[in-house]
Image (cartoon, rainbow, N blue to C red; front, top):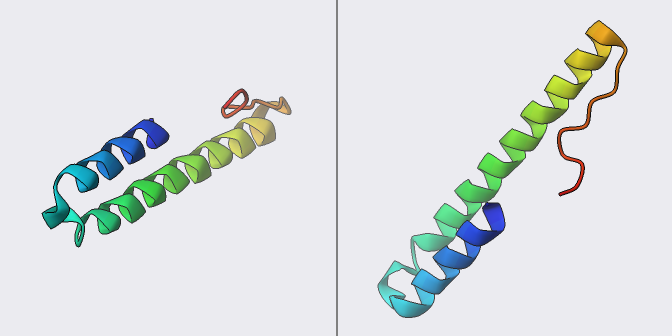
Length: 62
């Protein structure tokens, strides 16, 4: 989802040059949201391991 949205925003910048000044800010926000999701899934995996002693991987296969 991150990569497809990133490509869509890049395409929008190519078509409309007036958004080039603001679009990079949105690219950074998009990247930061992805990082927040990664950190949240890491916390979830750690909590599951502490409670059940079972390793769960949410991001495998990506």
